[in-house]
Image (cartoon, rainbow, N blue to C red):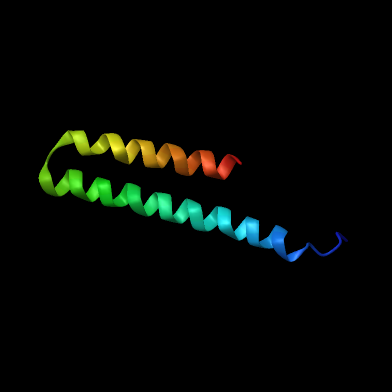
Length: 59
């Protein structure tokens, strides 16, 4: 059985998932904006936020 983790290790693990959720939320907002306004240019920030969210998961 693994030893219990320190509190800051658990907090950093939780911070990663919070950061991931926030980045996906911003991506969703830009996706909604692209849909509502009908402008494809708003898909660019959507892609950037999804990329950053995926990079956050890899760290």
